[in-house]
Image (cartoon, rainbow, N blue to C red; front, top):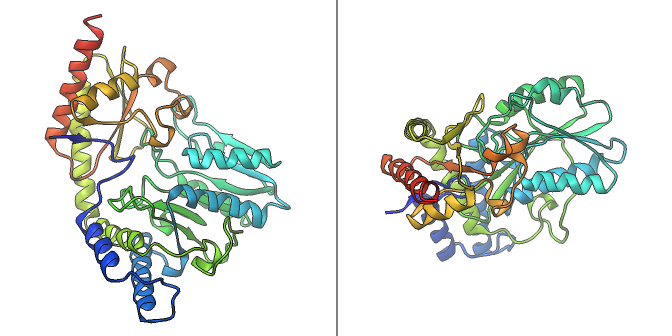
Length: 378
Protein backbone atom coordinates (compact mmCIF):
# COMPACT_ATOMS: atom_id res chain seq x y z
CA UNK A 1 0.00 0.00 0.00
CA UNK A 2 1.39 3.40 -1.02
CA UNK A 3 2.45 5.94 1.59
CA UNK A 4 1.59 9.32 0.10
CA UNK A 5 3.42 12.03 2.02
CA UNK A 6 3.47 14.81 -0.58
CA UNK A 7 0.29 16.63 0.40
CA UNK A 8 1.90 20.07 0.14
CA UNK A 9 2.20 19.40 -3.60
CA UNK A 10 -1.40 18.26 -3.89
CA UNK A 11 -4.00 16.41 -1.85
CA UNK A 12 -6.34 13.63 -2.86
CA UNK A 13 -9.81 15.05 -3.64
CA UNK A 14 -12.23 14.29 -0.84
CA UNK A 15 -15.56 12.49 -1.33
CA UNK A 16 -17.47 15.73 -0.86
CA UNK A 17 -15.49 17.37 -3.67
CA UNK A 18 -15.96 14.43 -6.03
CA UNK A 19 -19.70 14.26 -5.31
CA UNK A 20 -20.16 18.00 -5.90
CA UNK A 21 -18.15 17.90 -9.12
CA UNK A 22 -20.00 14.84 -10.40
CA UNK A 23 -23.37 16.43 -9.70
CA UNK A 24 -22.32 19.62 -11.49
CA UNK A 25 -21.06 17.68 -14.51
CA UNK A 26 -24.24 15.66 -14.74
CA UNK A 27 -26.89 18.17 -13.83
CA UNK A 28 -25.77 21.82 -13.72
CA UNK A 29 -23.90 21.89 -17.01
CA UNK A 30 -25.29 25.23 -18.17
CA UNK A 31 -23.20 28.34 -18.66
CA UNK A 32 -23.59 30.54 -15.55
CA UNK A 33 -23.84 33.59 -17.81
CA UNK A 34 -26.80 32.21 -19.75
CA UNK A 35 -30.16 33.77 -18.96
CA UNK A 36 -32.23 30.58 -19.13
CA UNK A 37 -32.98 28.11 -16.34
CA UNK A 38 -29.92 25.88 -16.89
CA UNK A 39 -27.72 28.96 -16.70
CA UNK A 40 -29.38 30.06 -13.47
CA UNK A 41 -28.89 26.60 -11.97
CA UNK A 42 -25.18 26.75 -12.75
CA UNK A 43 -24.91 30.28 -11.34
CA UNK A 44 -26.54 29.15 -8.10
CA UNK A 45 -23.91 26.42 -7.74
CA UNK A 46 -21.14 29.01 -8.18
CA UNK A 47 -22.83 31.33 -5.68
CA UNK A 48 -23.11 28.53 -3.11
CA UNK A 49 -19.43 27.62 -3.49
CA UNK A 50 -18.45 31.28 -3.14
CA UNK A 51 -20.29 31.39 0.17
CA UNK A 52 -18.52 28.22 1.36
CA UNK A 53 -15.06 29.57 0.53
CA UNK A 54 -15.92 32.96 2.04
CA UNK A 55 -17.10 31.29 5.25
CA UNK A 56 -13.71 29.60 5.55
CA UNK A 57 -11.99 33.00 5.35
CA UNK A 58 -14.68 34.74 7.46
CA UNK A 59 -15.41 37.33 4.80
CA UNK A 60 -18.29 38.47 2.61
CA UNK A 61 -18.90 36.22 -0.44
CA UNK A 62 -18.53 39.13 -2.87
CA UNK A 63 -14.92 39.53 -1.70
CA UNK A 64 -14.04 36.13 -3.23
CA UNK A 65 -12.91 36.02 -6.85
CA UNK A 66 -12.48 32.56 -8.39
CA UNK A 67 -9.35 31.81 -10.44
CA UNK A 68 -7.64 28.78 -11.92
CA UNK A 69 -5.39 28.37 -8.88
CA UNK A 70 -2.87 30.05 -6.61
CA UNK A 71 -0.44 30.96 -9.39
CA UNK A 72 -3.10 33.01 -11.15
CA UNK A 73 -4.28 34.49 -7.85
CA UNK A 74 -0.74 35.56 -6.95
CA UNK A 75 -0.11 37.02 -10.40
CA UNK A 76 -3.40 38.92 -10.39
CA UNK A 77 -2.69 40.29 -6.92
CA UNK A 78 0.81 41.47 -7.80
CA UNK A 79 0.42 42.68 -11.37
CA UNK A 80 -3.09 43.96 -10.66
CA UNK A 81 -1.82 46.11 -7.79
CA UNK A 82 1.15 47.35 -9.81
CA UNK A 83 -1.20 48.37 -12.61
CA UNK A 84 -3.64 50.15 -10.32
CA UNK A 85 -1.27 51.83 -7.87
CA UNK A 86 2.22 51.59 -9.34
CA UNK A 87 2.42 54.76 -11.38
CA UNK A 88 3.31 56.95 -8.41
CA UNK A 89 4.62 54.41 -5.91
CA UNK A 90 7.25 52.23 -7.57
CA UNK A 91 8.61 50.20 -4.66
CA UNK A 92 7.65 46.66 -3.62
CA UNK A 93 8.75 44.68 -0.54
CA UNK A 94 8.59 40.88 -0.49
CA UNK A 95 10.18 38.06 1.47
CA UNK A 96 13.01 36.11 -0.14
CA UNK A 97 11.30 32.78 0.58
CA UNK A 98 8.09 33.13 -1.43
CA UNK A 99 6.58 30.58 -3.78
CA UNK A 100 7.91 30.64 -7.35
CA UNK A 101 4.71 32.25 -8.67
CA UNK A 102 5.32 35.23 -6.39
CA UNK A 103 9.07 35.43 -6.93
CA UNK A 104 8.75 35.31 -10.71
CA UNK A 105 6.05 38.00 -10.73
CA UNK A 106 8.27 40.35 -8.77
CA UNK A 107 11.21 39.56 -11.02
CA UNK A 108 9.09 40.67 -13.96
CA UNK A 109 8.06 43.91 -12.22
CA UNK A 110 11.71 44.61 -11.50
CA UNK A 111 12.43 44.26 -15.22
CA UNK A 112 9.69 46.82 -15.83
CA UNK A 113 11.41 49.39 -13.63
CA UNK A 114 9.94 48.76 -10.18
CA UNK A 115 12.23 48.66 -7.17
CA UNK A 116 11.83 45.28 -5.46
CA UNK A 117 13.31 44.71 -2.00
CA UNK A 118 13.59 41.06 -0.97
CA UNK A 119 13.86 40.50 2.78
CA UNK A 120 15.67 37.31 3.81
CA UNK A 121 15.45 35.43 7.12
CA UNK A 122 18.01 36.32 9.79
CA UNK A 123 21.02 34.22 10.78
CA UNK A 124 18.72 32.05 12.91
CA UNK A 125 16.63 31.26 9.83
CA UNK A 126 13.65 33.30 11.02
CA UNK A 127 11.84 36.04 9.10
CA UNK A 128 11.95 39.09 11.34
CA UNK A 129 8.90 41.37 11.21
CA UNK A 130 10.93 44.44 12.16
CA UNK A 131 13.44 43.82 9.37
CA UNK A 132 10.60 43.59 6.86
CA UNK A 133 8.91 46.72 8.21
CA UNK A 134 12.13 48.71 8.02
CA UNK A 135 12.12 48.36 4.24
CA UNK A 136 8.63 49.82 3.80
CA UNK A 137 8.29 53.56 3.21
CA UNK A 138 5.84 56.07 1.73
CA UNK A 139 6.91 55.07 -1.79
CA UNK A 140 6.02 51.39 -1.23
CA UNK A 141 3.05 50.23 -3.28
CA UNK A 142 2.79 46.56 -2.30
CA UNK A 143 4.14 44.18 0.33
CA UNK A 144 3.91 40.38 0.03
CA UNK A 145 4.49 37.83 2.78
CA UNK A 146 3.40 34.21 2.61
CA UNK A 147 1.72 32.60 5.60
CA UNK A 148 3.37 29.15 5.56
CA UNK A 149 6.51 28.43 3.59
CA UNK A 150 5.82 25.62 1.16
CA UNK A 151 9.28 24.04 1.54
CA UNK A 152 10.01 24.20 5.27
CA UNK A 153 6.61 24.75 6.89
CA UNK A 154 7.85 27.91 8.61
CA UNK A 155 4.99 30.18 9.69
CA UNK A 156 5.75 33.82 8.90
CA UNK A 157 4.59 36.78 11.07
CA UNK A 158 1.98 38.00 8.60
CA UNK A 159 -0.57 39.62 10.90
CA UNK A 160 1.96 41.38 13.12
CA UNK A 161 3.87 42.71 10.11
CA UNK A 162 0.88 43.82 8.05
CA UNK A 163 -0.92 45.38 11.02
CA UNK A 164 2.10 47.52 11.88
CA UNK A 165 2.77 48.38 8.23
CA UNK A 166 -0.81 49.49 7.53
CA UNK A 167 -0.91 51.52 10.73
CA UNK A 168 2.11 53.54 9.60
CA UNK A 169 1.37 53.52 5.87
CA UNK A 170 -2.41 53.18 5.34
CA UNK A 171 -2.03 53.46 1.56
CA UNK A 172 0.12 50.30 1.43
CA UNK A 173 -1.45 47.25 -0.24
CA UNK A 174 -0.68 43.97 1.54
CA UNK A 175 -0.76 40.53 -0.10
CA UNK A 176 -0.49 37.08 1.47
CA UNK A 177 -0.01 33.79 -0.33
CA UNK A 178 -1.93 31.68 2.19
CA UNK A 179 -2.04 28.48 0.14
CA UNK A 180 -0.27 26.23 2.66
CA UNK A 181 -2.08 27.76 5.64
CA UNK A 182 -5.67 27.98 4.39
CA UNK A 183 -7.89 25.67 6.47
CA UNK A 184 -4.80 24.26 8.18
CA UNK A 185 -3.75 27.02 10.59
CA UNK A 186 -5.36 30.36 11.53
CA UNK A 187 -6.14 31.99 8.21
CA UNK A 188 -9.16 34.25 8.36
CA UNK A 189 -9.23 37.76 6.96
CA UNK A 190 -8.98 39.28 10.44
CA UNK A 191 -6.15 36.95 11.42
CA UNK A 192 -4.02 37.97 8.43
CA UNK A 193 -4.74 41.72 8.11
CA UNK A 194 -4.10 41.33 4.36
CA UNK A 195 -5.79 43.25 1.56
CA UNK A 196 -5.26 40.36 -0.87
CA UNK A 197 -5.16 36.64 0.01
CA UNK A 198 -4.37 33.82 -2.43
CA UNK A 199 -5.73 30.31 -1.85
CA UNK A 200 -6.00 27.06 -3.82
CA UNK A 201 -8.45 24.15 -3.98
CA UNK A 202 -6.11 21.24 -4.54
CA UNK A 203 -4.19 21.86 -1.30
CA UNK A 204 -7.38 21.27 0.75
CA UNK A 205 -8.71 18.10 -0.94
CA UNK A 206 -10.36 19.96 -3.81
CA UNK A 207 -9.50 19.45 -7.47
CA UNK A 208 -6.67 21.02 -9.45
CA UNK A 209 -7.65 23.99 -11.58
CA UNK A 210 -9.56 26.07 -9.03
CA UNK A 211 -8.35 28.80 -6.70
CA UNK A 212 -9.47 32.13 -5.33
CA UNK A 213 -8.27 35.60 -4.49
CA UNK A 214 -9.74 37.51 -1.56
CA UNK A 215 -9.90 41.23 -2.37
CA UNK A 216 -10.64 43.62 0.47
CA UNK A 217 -13.41 46.12 -0.24
CA UNK A 218 -12.02 49.29 -1.81
CA UNK A 219 -8.93 47.66 -3.34
CA UNK A 220 -8.59 48.21 -7.10
CA UNK A 221 -6.80 45.80 -9.43
CA UNK A 222 -6.15 45.93 -13.15
CA UNK A 223 -7.09 42.65 -14.87
CA UNK A 224 -4.68 40.23 -16.53
CA UNK A 225 -7.35 39.07 -18.98
CA UNK A 226 -10.02 40.90 -20.95
CA UNK A 227 -13.20 39.87 -22.73
CA UNK A 228 -16.09 39.25 -20.35
CA UNK A 229 -18.12 40.35 -17.36
CA UNK A 230 -17.40 37.33 -15.16
CA UNK A 231 -15.76 37.64 -11.73
CA UNK A 232 -16.08 41.43 -11.48
CA UNK A 233 -14.42 41.75 -14.92
CA UNK A 234 -11.14 40.79 -13.25
CA UNK A 235 -11.23 37.18 -14.40
CA UNK A 236 -13.32 37.02 -17.59
CA UNK A 237 -14.21 33.68 -19.15
CA UNK A 238 -16.81 31.03 -18.48
CA UNK A 239 -16.54 29.76 -14.91
CA UNK A 240 -15.70 26.08 -14.42
CA UNK A 241 -18.78 25.15 -12.43
CA UNK A 242 -17.61 21.60 -11.51
CA UNK A 243 -14.21 22.77 -10.25
CA UNK A 244 -15.72 25.62 -8.29
CA UNK A 245 -18.40 23.34 -6.81
CA UNK A 246 -15.70 20.90 -5.71
CA UNK A 247 -13.68 23.74 -4.19
CA UNK A 248 -16.64 24.90 -2.14
CA UNK A 249 -17.47 21.40 -0.94
CA UNK A 250 -13.86 20.73 0.07
CA UNK A 251 -13.66 24.05 1.93
CA UNK A 252 -16.86 23.26 3.83
CA UNK A 253 -15.58 19.81 4.77
CA UNK A 254 -12.20 21.12 5.92
CA UNK A 255 -13.79 23.93 7.93
CA UNK A 256 -16.10 21.49 9.70
CA UNK A 257 -13.27 19.11 10.64
CA UNK A 258 -10.44 21.64 11.11
CA UNK A 259 -9.78 21.02 14.80
CA UNK A 260 -9.75 17.23 14.55
CA UNK A 261 -7.57 17.32 11.43
CA UNK A 262 -5.02 19.63 13.00
CA UNK A 263 -4.78 17.41 16.07
CA UNK A 264 -4.36 14.31 13.91
CA UNK A 265 -1.69 15.86 11.69
CA UNK A 266 0.23 17.21 14.69
CA UNK A 267 0.41 13.68 16.11
CA UNK A 268 1.65 12.33 12.77
CA UNK A 269 4.34 14.98 12.46
CA UNK A 270 5.54 14.38 16.01
CA UNK A 271 5.74 10.64 15.32
CA UNK A 272 7.67 11.29 12.12
CA UNK A 273 10.14 13.49 14.01
CA UNK A 274 10.53 10.80 16.66
CA UNK A 275 11.23 8.02 14.17
CA UNK A 276 13.45 10.03 11.84
CA UNK A 277 15.47 11.53 14.68
CA UNK A 278 16.35 8.00 15.75
CA UNK A 279 18.06 7.38 12.39
CA UNK A 280 21.73 8.38 12.35
CA UNK A 281 22.49 10.91 9.64
CA UNK A 282 19.01 12.45 9.48
CA UNK A 283 18.77 16.16 10.31
CA UNK A 284 15.36 17.70 10.98
CA UNK A 285 14.92 21.35 10.00
CA UNK A 286 12.78 22.91 12.73
CA UNK A 287 11.70 26.52 12.11
CA UNK A 288 10.84 28.53 15.23
CA UNK A 289 7.13 28.44 14.43
CA UNK A 290 5.99 25.85 11.96
CA UNK A 291 2.92 24.27 10.43
CA UNK A 292 2.22 20.69 11.53
CA UNK A 293 1.50 19.83 7.90
CA UNK A 294 5.08 20.12 6.60
CA UNK A 295 8.33 18.58 7.80
CA UNK A 296 11.69 19.31 6.19
CA UNK A 297 14.53 16.85 6.77
CA UNK A 298 17.96 16.14 5.31
CA UNK A 299 19.51 12.69 4.93
CA UNK A 300 23.24 13.32 5.02
CA UNK A 301 25.24 11.70 2.25
CA UNK A 302 22.27 11.31 -0.11
CA UNK A 303 21.09 13.77 -2.73
CA UNK A 304 17.41 14.53 -2.31
CA UNK A 305 16.55 13.50 -5.87
CA UNK A 306 18.29 10.15 -5.42
CA UNK A 307 16.44 9.48 -2.18
CA UNK A 308 13.15 10.59 -3.67
CA UNK A 309 13.41 8.04 -6.49
CA UNK A 310 14.53 5.31 -4.10
CA UNK A 311 11.52 5.92 -1.87
CA UNK A 312 9.17 6.10 -4.84
CA UNK A 313 10.24 2.60 -5.88
CA UNK A 314 8.99 1.50 -2.47
CA UNK A 315 5.76 3.46 -3.04
CA UNK A 316 6.68 6.08 -0.47
CA UNK A 317 6.06 9.52 -1.96
CA UNK A 318 7.73 12.71 -0.76
CA UNK A 319 9.27 15.65 -2.62
CA UNK A 320 12.57 17.47 -2.86
CA UNK A 321 11.09 20.92 -2.25
CA UNK A 322 8.37 22.79 -4.08
CA UNK A 323 6.58 20.72 -6.71
CA UNK A 324 6.56 23.79 -8.98
CA UNK A 325 10.37 23.71 -9.17
CA UNK A 326 10.29 20.19 -10.67
CA UNK A 327 13.35 19.18 -8.69
CA UNK A 328 15.40 22.30 -9.43
CA UNK A 329 16.90 24.20 -6.45
CA UNK A 330 14.71 27.18 -5.56
CA UNK A 331 17.13 28.95 -3.24
CA UNK A 332 14.53 29.00 -0.47
CA UNK A 333 16.43 26.56 1.75
CA UNK A 334 19.60 28.63 1.43
CA UNK A 335 17.59 31.74 2.29
CA UNK A 336 16.51 29.97 5.47
CA UNK A 337 20.25 29.57 6.27
CA UNK A 338 20.31 25.82 5.72
CA UNK A 339 23.89 24.84 4.68
CA UNK A 340 24.34 23.92 1.02
CA UNK A 341 25.30 20.31 1.73
CA UNK A 342 22.13 19.79 3.78
CA UNK A 343 19.95 21.73 1.34
CA UNK A 344 21.02 19.37 -1.43
CA UNK A 345 19.97 16.44 0.76
CA UNK A 346 16.67 17.85 1.99
CA UNK A 347 13.31 16.24 1.35
CA UNK A 348 9.89 17.66 2.15
CA UNK A 349 7.44 15.39 3.97
CA UNK A 350 3.91 16.75 4.02
CA UNK A 351 0.90 15.30 5.79
CA UNK A 352 -2.86 15.23 5.73
CA UNK A 353 -5.33 13.78 8.24
CA UNK A 354 -5.77 10.67 6.09
CA UNK A 355 -2.14 9.64 6.63
CA UNK A 356 -1.46 6.84 9.09
CA UNK A 357 1.24 5.62 11.46
CA UNK A 358 1.95 2.95 8.85
CA UNK A 359 2.91 5.69 6.36
CA UNK A 360 5.45 7.07 8.84
CA UNK A 361 6.82 3.58 9.45
CA UNK A 362 7.24 3.03 5.69
CA UNK A 363 9.05 6.35 5.37
CA UNK A 364 11.49 5.65 8.19
CA UNK A 365 12.19 2.14 6.93
CA UNK A 366 12.67 3.47 3.40
CA UNK A 367 15.22 6.08 4.52
CA UNK A 368 17.13 3.50 6.57
CA UNK A 369 17.16 1.14 3.57
CA UNK A 370 18.40 3.94 1.30
CA UNK A 371 21.27 4.65 3.66
CA UNK A 372 22.20 0.97 3.77
CA UNK A 373 22.02 0.40 0.01
CA UNK A 374 23.20 3.74 -1.34
CA UNK A 375 25.74 4.92 1.27
CA UNK A 376 27.10 2.03 3.29
CA UNK A 377 27.61 -0.25 0.27
CA UNK A 378 29.66 2.30 -1.69
